Image (cartoon, rainbow over all chains, first blue to last red; front, top):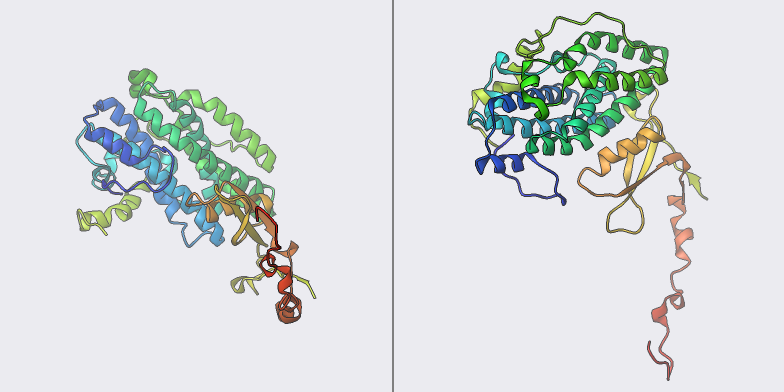
Length: 275
Length: 110
């Protein structure tokens, strides 16, 4: 991550983190509530990217290394835009927010904090988060907040591919061998307790009105999409109780601290380092 | 003379009872190109995943607007050992090139 504006190499008008930074530099005002909401979206993307990055050099095949790496980089891009925007409310940069907040400052969901497990569990988590993000961003494009809408429009096309990637793998693992079916089924069971938190409304969502997407509205289309994929894959929607989480996202799973320690150590050891 | 390209077994997979994904050849058509051009190869379990892997591997930097993937085993190639016999023939047959011919008298617009 960097505040430096890179030269635009690819053609087109994709909305980039640098474009958000430019808007902020021109004095764009961001309210506390909007910033808090942007943090939730950005932190989910950031923590997920950090998790997925672990797979590079460890995926079952080289091609899959690159696929997961690409998805992680897309998520980093979304995180950069959301965090740059959120930071404008407090005069902080994306790097300040990513590397110099403690665990209680993060607003990520329990789901993205969950360890990768095996490939089956990672695909189970990918299926849940990408279907959720797809429903979310496809509505956030109509947000009353123009910046959030623009970030969502860029992210939606990428998440569309993430969802397809997860779906293709869910179908192949579910309908593959006995072993692959067992692994993805176990993966689904282990991530399912954390699904509920994604769809909880709270006071912040109420206050934001047309700026935010109401999470509870996403549950029905999410369930329908997941049910169709799992039925086609010969898998069942897990029937497990949901975990104790936190709808305001201030409390976290026990895994986040370790993840942050690894993600932040370099920036904290050498503040301002570049290469 | 011609023989099918053999699927390459990755050394790491041998003797581990692990099935290797088949090899696919990837052809990319760039936004400015009219034809698909061979870009490289990859491994994928099936055709659908091969197209997706090709997207990730060969169109990362905006290279393409269209992709083809072909099972490497479906490509029939000329035999490299028979190169001499196979490609020798056109040599010395300059009359197969348009430049061999001189312009005839009285031909206009050439």
